[in-house]
Image (cartoon, rainbow, N blue to C red):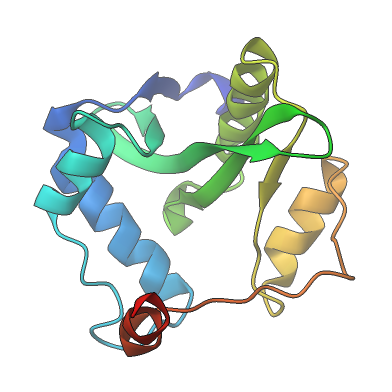
Length: 163
């Protein structure tokens, strides 16, 4: 088997929740998140992925019975294009299973989904220090949007704004 032939991609099912939860924590560890920074529970994921209002979707890559990686994404919208887009929230491949084409295959499948849904684009964030990821994304034809700054509000500041 060539490296590109030894894995399978598929949409996540409810039975995959423990593995998805573990992969999210593995990604957080890779990104040097402080302890306690990822309070998400399997129940939270069940509601977001399989509840009455599906907010997010997950593609899984597996090698044999092992979940090798995942892509978590949701649809957004471009007012300028007048069309939907796909926002890639997470892309992660287990370190020991990298360099097999799994990340590229997950992104390729996500691009196919985007085109099927008439999406104008795919977007995602990458940490400034993650040079391997930046190089990988550039090799696919992706370009950084250096002129944009991300803003976030949460916790008590979000509550205060809503008041």
